[in-house]
Length: 353
Ligand SMILES: NC(=O)c1ccc[n+]([C@@H]2O[C@H](COP(=O)([O-])OP(=O)(O)OC[C@H]3O[C@@H](n4cnc5c(N)ncnc54)[C@H](O)[C@@H]3O)[C@@H](O)[C@H]2O)c1
Image (cartoon, rainbow, N blue to C red; front, side, top):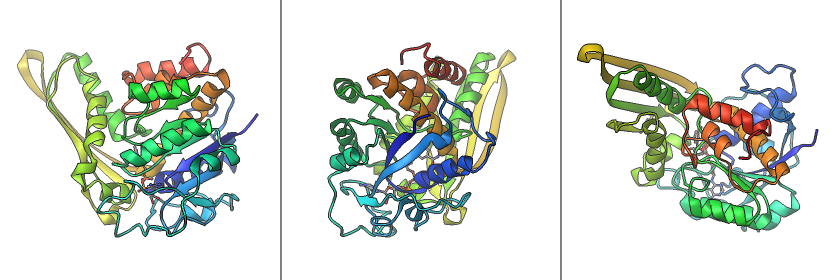
């Protein structure tokens, strides 16, 4: 089975979790914890990391296996990744670092590399975008670099690329697939919230109000204290839940605070109130506690393997089934069971995109 050659922009906690996770499954036969052991014949350890970009002086110039443990990364260690022979390269800063990250991410003084050339020389096939929330210019830079370098693009963050028709068209013209936007974690707040609202609506309750409040102690949550960087994040999370109801539900969703000692744990509170039989009241109040970066990695291993299949089949432009299954703000929203069935049809070759 061929390998899947992946480049990463942003060597933070999510990069650490997927790199450690791929090594974890490489070391054992078990498929426990995976949604799919195989996607089109590919196992998680078919994924090979061949190139990486960051701006932090603690990460640039280091082997990727070392860089993933540099501060302020704080996701737990689940495996000892041997040196990968991939040096983290200095990418352009643009709007990558917001006002709260300035104090914890020292920017490297090394010269910026030619990202397109680096993608070509490393023979990357897919570029995964893991930049901080609010990195609109930097995300557009990497999306352009992917097109110029001839690699597919998977956008794990809430800046709209796959779900933006103009960007999708650029990828189509470039003959490349694009997936995104904003990864929907494996057993995460969004899929749980979507499922609760859909269940209540399907069973005849009129949902009157709902919120989802999230707290965490990693740089993602620190960065998200900056409300001006959050516009697309709120839109991404809220649209995913709103799509589960045929009527408008007053909804408030977003990151709510940074609690440093939670480290990479995320705690989520979901609440909804509605009325069912005879106009009587029903309330649901749920708390979810996860390790945030691993929650995203469990889905990204499927997104990467599905995108590789799209490359093999020459699919161009936005990947609708894969994106509906793996991302919060896809080109086309679907309820979870429909998205999962569409993804499975796509990976089995029964659906074009
Ligand atoms: N469950 C999840 O963790 C989850 C779910 C959905 C979306 N996301 C999104 O994924 C993204 C990554 O999350 P994370 O927890 O790894 O964040 P992180 O803050 O740990 O990592 C971001 C990395 O990007 C680097 N960076 C900043 N500007 C850069 C630039 N211009 N070029 C290259 N690198 C740059 C930083 O130095 C850091 O290493 C975030 O946008 C987050 O919101 C995460």
